[in-house]
Structure formats: structure tokens, C-alpha cells
Amino acid sequence: MTASSLRFGMSGILAAGILVFCVLALTGSAFGGTFTVVSMVRLAIATSLLAVAAVLVLLGFLRGPFGDLVVGATAAFAAAALLATSARHPGAAEAGFWALTVAAWLAAWLFVERLAAWRPSAPVARRAVSLAIPLLFGVWVLVLWELAVVGFGIPKVLLPAPSAIWDRLISSGPVLWADFRQTFLKAVLVGYAIGCGAGFLVAVLVDRVPFLRRGLLPIGNLVSALPIIGVAPIMVMWFGFDWPSKAAVVIIMTFFPMLVNTVTGLASADRMQRDLMHTYAASYGQTLVKLRLPMALPFIFNALKINSTLALIGAIVAEFFGTPIVGMGFRISTEVGRMNVDMVWAEIAVAALAGSLFYGLITLAERVFTFWHPSVRG
Image (cartoon, rainbow, N blue to C red; front, side, top):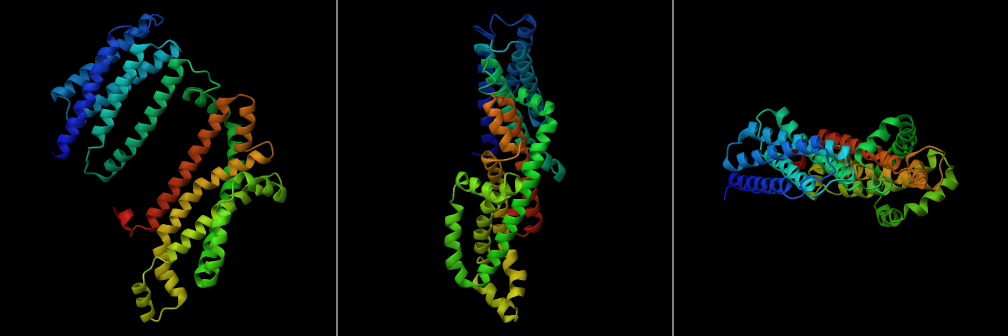
């Protein structure tokens, strides 16, 4: 069976599922007696468009990029209708509403599945397609989250809707910026730079002095297993309540992953390559710079990516144990006590966005400096 036939088979299954759930949405207790006429007409139009698109896919009329875009536009229209209706009637959704939600989700799945099969010739277009797929996935996660929270009438104290979190992000911009500056721009970046830099330098020293490998690495494994909740209070007592104590926690968390990965990377050059450098009368420094460090770059960047997430987690958790009245961890702990859960989720969103961007920048740097590696070339 060819790949194209497999894709067509998957498209047919998804289109059939869309049609089934559209029929379920239009029959029985469709959208609840509490919905207004305008809302029911809006949902009925969305359901009909989804059903027509599914039939056209099954009959083979919606093919190619244009047909795929029609499926995507239909799914987007259905999502907009569902969001508008749920906002007007919170907690009133019934069986037909959820059947239409499933049908819209299957239509979005069908669109993304077809989008993944696009093979544009232009590099920019290929890059745009590869970025659109995870972006659409994230958008639909937010849409389903919003529909579930509003449609079921879940209290905000248990789980706020994405719209409520967005409103809090907009209204609390100065507070969120102050927390971000205190936690990320000070504690995380300073601790990350010192921890990773010190780990790298000590790894080169360990590689140069063999007995340190037998003595220091076991201690490193022991220290890396220490719990944050045990280390953070000690760092607060040593360095005070401000950001240096949080940076110290970040240094401890990032030092040993960098050390272990760099030592492993420096040892990755095989014996034949080292013998070749020896025949060229290369010194230790020349061998290190021209052979062993380039071979260790994938391991070093792996540690940098791991530490980018560990640093943010460590700084936020460390702020639970003593901090000035600013910081992401401080804000999360206090707002939970005040039952302002939307503010907690706003801080989580800022932290997730900052961590993702930080990780992405390191990944881009990895592609620049390790372009020769098979994982990057592939």
C-alpha cells in the first residue's frame, strides 16, 4: 500500500467521522432549549458546512491545496461559531454542542493531516508549513480548553478559561513585567551563564587532569540529585532574599549537567582521530580546539538545552522559600493563597513563553554551530 493511499484512507476515516458527528449534532436535543434562535442558527450553519465539506472529501471533490484550505476554513468557522455561542450561554451546552465540537476538531485534524502532506518547492513555503502545523495544534488546544471550561461552566477557581487568562495578561502587564525581570532577567540568566560556564571550564580541567574524573564526577552525580526544596532555603540564608540566592540555586542545578555532558563530549573523539592529530604533532590545545571541542558541541548544546528549562524551574521554586515582594515564584505562591487562579495561570503562561523562546534561541544557535552534524543536516 502506497503512502498516498494511506493518506487518502486516513482522510476518508476523518471525513466519515465528521459526517457522523454532524448528523448527531443536528438530531435529538441538538443545542439545548436555553440557546437563543441566533445561536442555534449559527450552529446549524456551521454543522451544515462541515457536513457538506465531509461529503465532498468522501466524493473526492476537495483535493489539492484549494480543497485543503476549504476544509481548514470550514473548521475555523465552526470553531468561531462554537466560541461565540459558548460565551453567550456559559454552562448551557448539551449533546449537540459537543457533537459539533468533535466534528470541528476532526475537521481541523483532517486539515492538519493534509497540510503535513504538502511539499512546496520554495524553502520559505516549506518552513511556513512546518511552523503552521504546531501553531494550529496549539490554537486548537486553546479552543478546546475554552469550549470545555465555558461549556461545562467550570468555576474559575478550578480552571480559568484562556480568555480569562488573556484578560489578566493584558490588565496586569506591569506586574508581570516586574516579576519577569526579577526572576528571568536576573536570577535565571545570571545563574545560567555562571553555572554553564563554570561547568564547561571544569570539564576541560577534568579532561586534562584524569584523577579529577574519578574524584569529581561521582560527587557531581551526588550533588545533582539534591532536591531543590532542600537547597533553596540554604541559599536564601547564605545569599539573602534577593535574586542572588535564586541565581545560586540555578548555578547548582546547571553546573553538573554541563560538566557531565562536556566531559562525555570531549571523550567522543575516537582513537584514530586522536592518533591522526598526534602524527601532525598537534599539542593538547590544538587537539582540543580543532578536534575535541567540535566533536563535543552536540553534547554541550544538549546540556545547554536541558539547563534552559532547569534554570527557570529552579529559580521559580527557589522563590517559594523567601524573596522580595516580586518574582514569578512569589506571585504564584501568594495568588494561590488569594484564590486568584487566573493570575497564577498568567504567570505560568509568561514562564512557558519565556522558557520556550530561550530554548528556541539555543536550538537556533545549535543549528548554526553544528551544521555539519548528521542530526542537523537531516
